Length: 315
Image 1 (cartoon, helix red, strand yellow):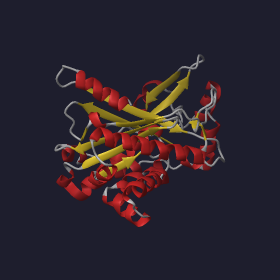
Image 2 (cartoon, helix red, strand yellow; image 1 turned 135 degrees about the horizontal axis):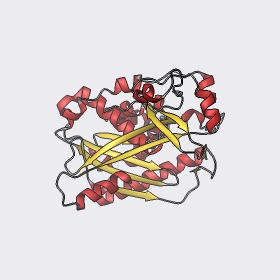
Image 3 (cartoon, rainbow, N blue to C red; image 1 turned 60 degrees about the horizontal axis):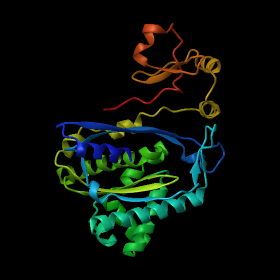
Image 4 (spheres, rainbow, N blue to C red; image 1 turned 90 degrees about the vertical axis):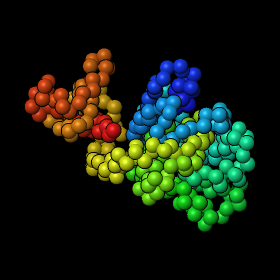
């Protein structure tokens, strides 16, 4: 919704060259030993939105919507972990996808069959690796009569697996998951197609439990190769930090009070080019710093824990 809000504001602006930035950042955290624990993840995506985009041009007039009041997913007041009703939540996703897709078709003046066959790059919200694939199986079976074999071929031809497979390593990032998967899709398709990626029709499904689904259509712009040629998402994916089960247990037991946070982080080093949580004041205010500042204000050996750092920012 933030992306559509910024895009709509730019449409009504009379200032040439005006642009906006949309950021999606979140941590998916669940109770330990719950079925949802393996889907945990964290990440952030930042998107530059312009009236004359260089990567993808979205058609705001055909955006499809579906929303309903359901309790499939929520975080109770005062809780550090979310609650999710597994099978019910998946059914809500499927119902919302169908509703938003049909609304998009009505607004675009297309039959569901035409909308699906015309789309050349397809990506969905990815709370875990198999959810969007299962959702596309339902959509393609209902509207095109596809079997599993036809569905796999359809999705492979549209770069779908190249987008969702990397998220098996990243985990769930909630609203950012669609755009992370889309980035990997575009990155790999450009490596295969080169300039032929220009003009490809894109179909995207963004989702938030509780719930709202949005379907967006667009096209890859002529300047996209210039942008995509600067990306190295293989390196981004490889820049992970191995962690022990002890590190993981420390993370799941947090957040900690200020004194305990200081004790746990004493003597730990912060990797270069990273932001980190330097301290927590008595009133609860969190002070974040960059590794480059360490030598300016911290005594030797008192760098904060890389357990609390953020990942490097790649432009």
